[in-house]
Length: 155
Image 1 (cartoon, rainbow, N blue to C red):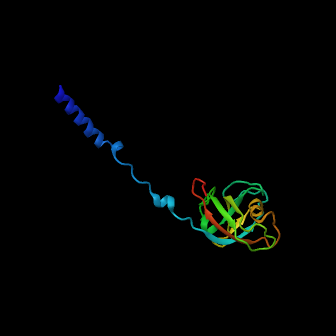
Image 2: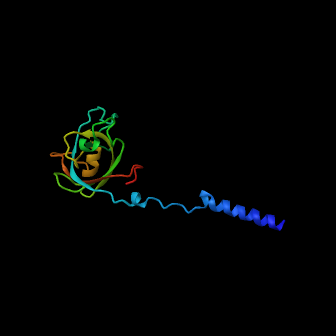
Image 3: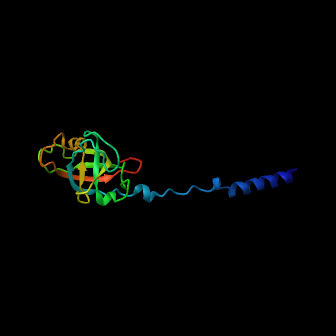
């Protein structure tokens, strides 16, 4: 009886050690989580939506915090590559009547800006005004620093 208990205990130990649950957990891919966000330096402008759907297929109010991303980012497929993605934008000064230097806003990609340079963004009225302290006055341009938020929306 004692001998059988030793054999059973040894077999249980062998099964436990061979079990995937007994193996140490793999380290998470920390490079993916710790990767530095890439800041993009560009110019912000604003655009009129006029009740039309953006290239991502949705109609938004002028007050919504959305942006049009340059075609160089969005690509030529449908839906465009970054639709629905969150972007954090910082007002970096410049422009006239810009009372928002240092303000930060998170907006959603909802359209494509075919005339924008690679790191420039076209903003809805709501996004533009949130970053400038309410101004839409001409020339309607100011400097920005922006980056994509994580795919889960965390900035």
